Length: 217
Image (cartoon, rainbow, N blue to C red; front, side):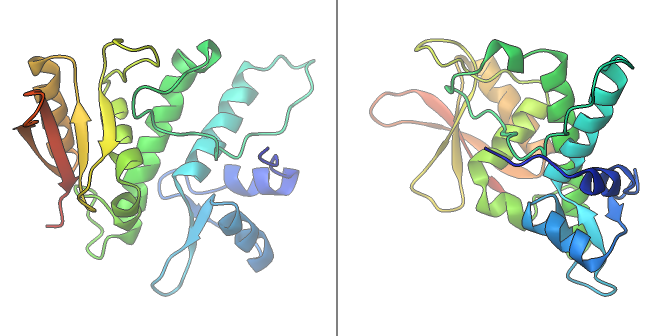
């Protein structure tokens, strides 16, 4: 089980710059957030610390909880956000994880991803994937699709929606969709999110699918 944030860590995250996610704190505090995946140390001087996508989600979760809680209710510890995962399609989803809360989580995760691109791409570009996305292809592509409003397939066989899967190619994922219009829409979304994407046909099943890889330039 993921350990809840301490009160000091919550304060540090909530005090981060709302635009850049820049953090201020002691070296020990910042290192603790890095260890938990909520912050990263910028590789270039002055080596400031910034929230990761998980850190942005943790801050938004804490803010949403504060807004929705009654004054008489005790405040529960904020989640670290580390349990968030973009839906690749086909996984079971608890009913409680649907609705506006999920929409906020996905929106926050995508904004955090764009900020991570800005901070880690050499030219500060946000229009193409960063190193983290290149090592987490399925999660990155699924996040781009879900953030754009595409619906992932349900856990039951035959439930419509996209499915993102690994491929034998080390730098590409396959995206399957129930029909041609949805497949084309997935191509457009991925291309707009900085991926190279094209439609192909499986030799044996003759089904169309999308092969996508992170754009480098």
